[in-house]
Length: 203
Image (tube, rainbow, N blue to C red):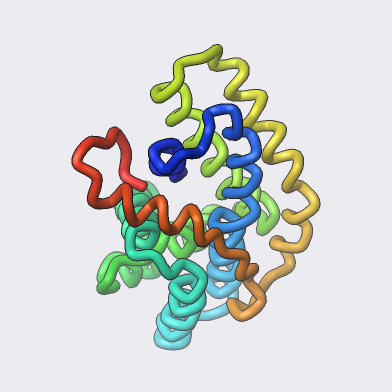
């Protein structure tokens, strides 16, 4: 979730709760919106039209995720999800995602899985935001050990803070309407982290 580069970049550990909310409002909201739009596309389109829609959705994701390090991190996560999903729910949709070059983003893969498994749009968005929050908390517990219950509380607080946004995200069908809330500072931290010689996590 970008926590390690933030701490290496000078953010105080005391600011982790604010960092959680900021990440959910920016990069995680973008990927949640991409997931919801992808879910809609898989539910309503097929064949070449769907592949073309994937291209359009990924273009919008890339425009909202300018840093190579964060793009690489999203694609790395997506590769793992896709490998698992293709074993659990074999589908031509997932096969089409697997042959994309470069690989698909996390939002594209999560949205396709949501469509294939019948996950509602609002729960798709909620899943992306919660995953981001728990990833940050898990990283914090390794970097600054504390009571895991405290970390869980932080994640739940951050997700509750974003609950009003979920109602909006769940209505998205056009990739052009996905939030374009960027985080230039977190992008810069992630780029510096990508070439760091000592690190525990990928950005």
